[in-house]
Length: 174
Image 1 (tube, rainbow, N blue to C red):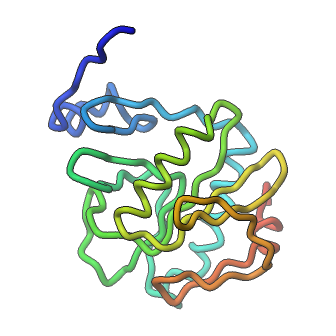
Image 2: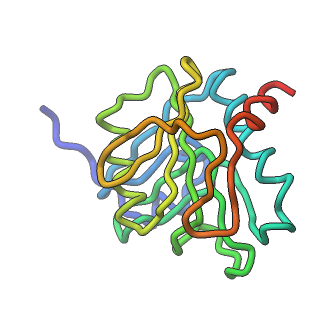
């Protein structure tokens, strides 16, 4: 097995042409993210649109594919991130956001996804959701485990927000 070439974090952060938007930084290694396909992009957009409809009411911001520094040696790029509008704007988030959403791509490996979700939890993010576009299943990540979300409407742990999954489904390709 070849030894990976370690990349200094400064090179990752300041080489946008090489690593954006589909790369993450994990302990000195660049990890390319699977390229989204139509179903992936549609779910990503629907989740974003749900929160865009509530920006002022909930005093939040929502962004797709915004870098989050989950630790000193790890930078992740969630599909959708929701964070408090009252926090100072950061080009790369360093404070735990209210929620992150990951939408599975056909190339995603569950073992790699679980490490990523664990990084979010270790940062202190309490609302971590995974959507599988192939089955339309929604999963909650807590304490190192994925569990099916069976409720239609969920209150998000660290904010005045909720998400109505039936309403999000109506936004698919709307």
